[in-house]
Length: 355
Ligand code: KG4
Ligand code: ZN
Image 1 (cartoon, rainbow, N blue to C red):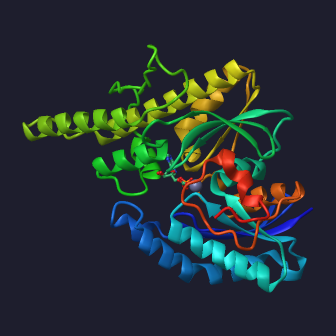
Image 2: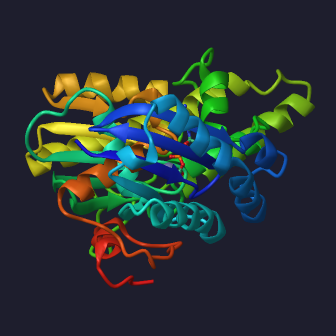
Image 3: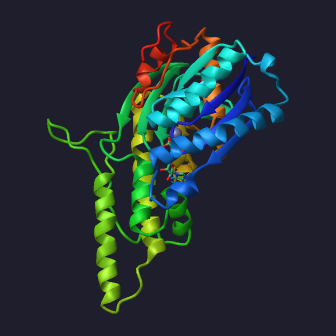
């Protein structure tokens, strides 16, 4: 039953958590979203500064709330890759300093492995391999998981991530940042079938289309064209742009395409369990769509608890627990990597730091 203190600072949320045996004893997040919102996206320099300011209080808060002393901890973990390099460094240096100070093992965690592990904070998964749809602001991937740390990527987005598409479309609709929650709210009263939008197929060199890969950049352009046309009609004396219908139509096509291709991949792979994690997994229409399709296909379905879909440190602690139980430990010299594919996560636990 390992007990882990984990830090997450890969992007625009500073977070700390204490987790014991996949149970959250304390979790705290300081979001910088409002500050970045004025710029329409994350400003890396601001993110690093805010992490430096926020982390000490967050760590104190979770240590106090959990009632755990440093002596009771089995390890200290921090996200080491991928993410914004300056932001990652803040968490990594803090985590490694605490580990040195309190003579505890340090684990540098892969951010996507953290997202994958967020599902363990909810209901237990059925036995056996499963397919994960990871949908966040930076990634849209399908990953086959055959056991802890055994991953195979089966599909990805060829251009924008799903969350990025939500953020860009929200911006062009004037709905603010981050786009996902803003679009969900605007779409609630809209007609999701009013405007047909493209599902973004990926052509194969030998002809035909990739069965699972995604493409969201054409969809974003199609929404832009649609909005320009609706604005022109409004200016010519027509009705105001039906924002709710545009938002709902966009949200629906993203949900449809994610659900269709992921369930098809699970069936083709003979996998009976489908898991959804990442910020976009918080989307209500997507969760409903996946639930309906999975029950029609008699697939088991799990998603990360809503509170742990977007970035948090509890998921990083669960990933660290799994690595620790498998005998994993990082070098105290391990730095950070802005890019590192999930399949390469094992390098984080080599005795000689790879970077
Ligand atoms: O996982 P996450 O917090 O950060 C990354 O690792 O990228 O995901 C953030 C993304 C943002 O693009 C945000 O717009 C999206 O998740 N998101 C949502 C919702 N909540 C957050 N997208 C759709 N619907 C939501 N309810
Ligand atoms: Zn994330």
